[in-house]
Image (cartoon, rainbow, N blue to C red; front, side, top):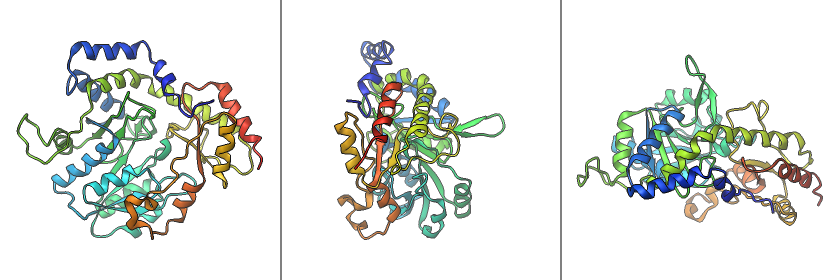
Length: 377
């Protein structure tokens, strides 16, 4: 069986450094808010290109804390609206509604699966306070119109960078490039084990250039406290632990190289999958040269997706569906059941994610391509 993502094999590829890092934490006997977290936050903010990085327990909390911090700073209040892509993972919506803010769902573009900026203005009201941009599947999404709209209406831009760590866009001046996570006013990151930069368990981070926001996020993540036993806010307990930070420090230096390996595999997919019923991802240049995409997921579309998935499974190829049920069709948001979002629903009913990871072999990629091209119904 070709696994969709062989996390055990990925973990083993970082040995013995990973085991040494774990042993270092155990021997030190300090497991929260210690040297490993301090070091990782410094290394990660330098990698992303921001002034601040605050480790959190997971990616959902990172987004929750950003919004909660803006509310404490008086820039948002309960009932305010946040524009968010309709086809994202439900965590993007949960972060908004958990703060008693209102998610306003906007359809994506079918060619990129990212937020269709042309539909944003029609959804803006006096209560709109921010746009949450999701770099879905690993593709940086930062059209020039986005910043223009945000400036015109005085909106914040929050990045959900859970899937696109390492993705780059052209920079200016001395900066040849800028990474996702440094583009907006604040960004939430996820280090779930299956991510391109994955921890050994849950983990996340907030990055920002805003000093006041960073200070507030750090306090809110630590029970609303900047000083032990002094609690200025009704905060959370959401902290990246020392073990996860140590593991991430081992993995971070190899991230760009691993992302480039993903691009090489994707290029083979794009060049050799020729099945007439399969829709491949659309990119502007070659996958190898397109640094704006880190291919956390390689997503195809097929009108009879479930049959294709079963066929591939029967042939020993594991695939996944990201995601089978759109957020507005989930029982958790049953109040949205009447929303008319045809593009989102088409995407969720036809997408299929093929295996892609830096530890896969070229033979495995070739086998997947040949199997797909031979698919008949």
